Amino acid sequence: MMKLYGTPPTRALRAIWLLNELGLEYELLPVNLLQGENQQQDFLALNPAAKVPVLVDGSLVVTESAAIQLYLAEKYPQAVFIPETVEDRAQMYRWIFFLVTEIEQPLWRIARHTFIYPEEKRLPQDVDLARQECLEMVAVLERHMKEREFMVGDRLSVADFNAAYTLDWANEEKMLDGAPRLREYLKTMYSRPTAPPTIAEAFAAIKS
View 1 (cartoon, rainbow, N blue to C red):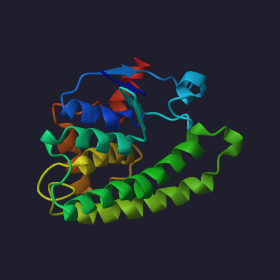
View 2 (view 1 turned 60 degrees about the horizontal axis):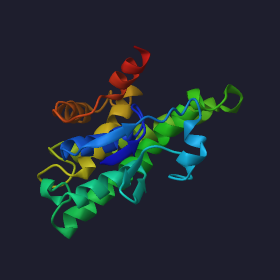
View 3 (view 1 turned 90 degrees about the vertical axis):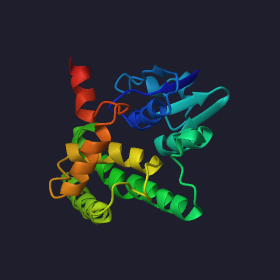
View 4 (view 1 turned 180 degrees about the horizontal axis):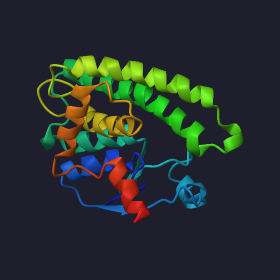
């Protein structure tokens, strides 16, 4: 059985979604970041970057949430979450990289400078810059999805599952207020029976 290290609302949700979609059995092993469990030697042996999620499949260790998604989709091709043509695969990779670098990174900057970093290290001006950069890239994605059902081609791909988590995070930061198509797309993705909890639901579960 596969093991997944990480807990919602972290990017472990991306991996959980693919595992659910593929109907795979897995063991979810919580890693308490606030208590520094990701800095312990047994975890660092899996991922020296001290980040979650980490997927362990037999002797194989895969880190980085998007890489885990792609690995699972390729290992279980029957779901056809990897496009068949090289052209569509290129577009899938394009939008995955776009989501991770152009939308997720500004969200990380906002998080770091609002609650992750110690207060003396926070830069309020970087929050403003990151918010503007994120909004500009959300607008690009809104235009791309305006007449589309899926990120790439005419069926679900890894790009959609990556996008759903990223956009849920953006929505939590009020980045989708001017993106009605993306809000609709997000609602559709999270209506799937295999969808993991949203970030808000995960936080609510932690508080309860």
